[in-house]
Amino acid sequence: MYEILDFIADCYSPILLICFVVACTNALRRKKYPLVIRGILFLVMALLFSYGVMFADHHFMWFARASLDYSTHTAVALSGVMAIAFMGWSKAWLGASLLGYGLLMLYQRYHTVLDIAVTVLVIAPFLSGVFYFLRRQCDSR
Image (cartoon, one colour):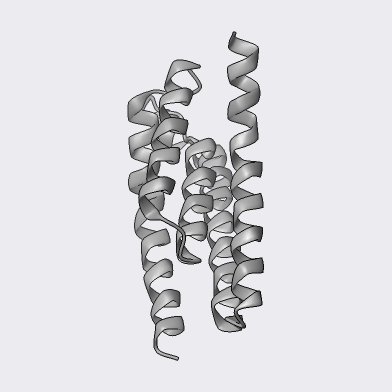
């Protein structure tokens, strides 16, 4: 059972990427080019920040000093979900999928609740700021 759930968890981020590509394709069909460009920019910035914090944490051991583990799984999943939301997909559905993924990570013992929560607290302010800045640029056109 562990292996099946592990496989499902491993599929979550690639599924998010597929959903993002579908969302971009739909926006391109509607000729919403600025939305697609800014959506891709958002995803790239979000992933760079998520992995940048991971590399910095490996170097400086911020999380380890607090007896925590930076959850790259959480950071990347949050980046993907927010990128899809940026493209206009249902935030309720995306939030439910992210919650389910978090519960799966807990069940599989990838991370603790505190690992996940602190990772979100570190990542979310940056992602939210970039999200709203870029989204405002799309809405003002």
